[in-house]
Image (cartoon, rainbow over all chains, first blue to last red; front, top):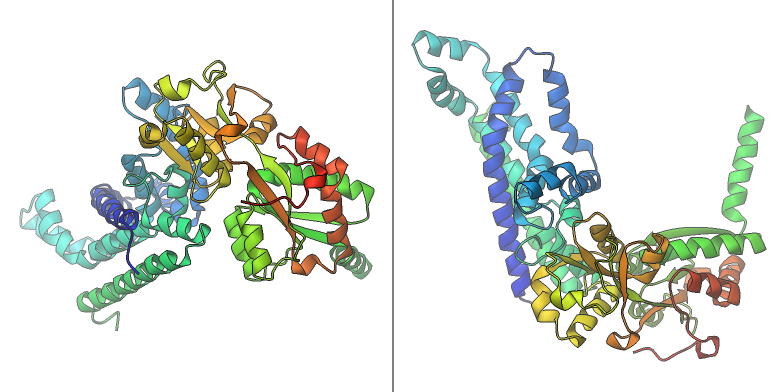
Length: 228
Length: 255
């Protein structure tokens, strides 16, 4: 039993997709989570609800709307064509956009909880010591919310690795571009190639187990009193 | 109130236990199957319940005990396997439809009558069904190989999981054109522009049906299975864009 070239390509593509998605989500999710944790605006609950939507929506709904929105006849797609850009479905950047939406709550919610748990006091103390807003964030918030960052990043990464429905709908199954691991497994099963399906599935199972185990161990180290 | 519940219960159980036939249908044949089912229901007491999905998925489900009486696949390989595995009634397998593929675009005047666009078009994406999974995809690949265009076009292909998704890639404009089933174009009202691919460019797409073990003893399943081979059903199948094999060549040789 050994992996075919397409399968190895699918594994690399999946890891690349998950890494890029996680990094970009960190950039987008941190300010969003911060705002959600601190704001008193009436917009807080609606925005929080929108952020949580990918948790409940079937991936096919997301995929369906993305295909329509991003396609050449959709509002976003036609705008991109007018700007001289390529439309997103069937491309790697398209998968990144879809994955960011799909995994958004997995990044934002742990961060939001971590930020909320810090409370006002440490920031007020830092402010009286004349720390600038950025300085307060970098030297007070980030260390205190470390476990939130870790959890968010690991979950977003793992959730993107396991993504299937959305990619099936907007990916177009192009090797090296959109043929990711979960789609490769699906193809093997459909083609009755159970041997290769097992190989990849078992790999993913072990990977997922290790991720969750690591996450628990990390949380135990940062919060020994909570997670035992 | 109690009376109503009793009546409701009675009618539901009547529906379930009176002769109903559960059919697993390949997604590309769901629409004709529904038509045939309705016609059948008018001429008999039985109820037809249709579940559609990809041939591969339905096959796996049947292998693992899914409660279907009949299987209408999109290929001949899966019905053959079921016959070998003892899940299907031996000798029941027959070709109920021959699939036809066309090159199609929703844009009128875009695809020419001879498929020259394949050679000369500046389209960015051409949609086909995944040749590894779907018979229509394999046929599309054969056409391009036969025309010597496969290696040149490969980089521009997007592959649908099945022929239904392939059609949807083209309808939504995400791919400019695609190899789809004639039946789909017909169901969409024959709009757009189309190249009817000559038969000699691809191996016939034999869609085969088998009677499953569970349906062997069911009168409804047997009645529907017979109906499917009769002239009324064949007429419906033809009118919806498939070919049928001559009725005396029922148990034709499969690849």
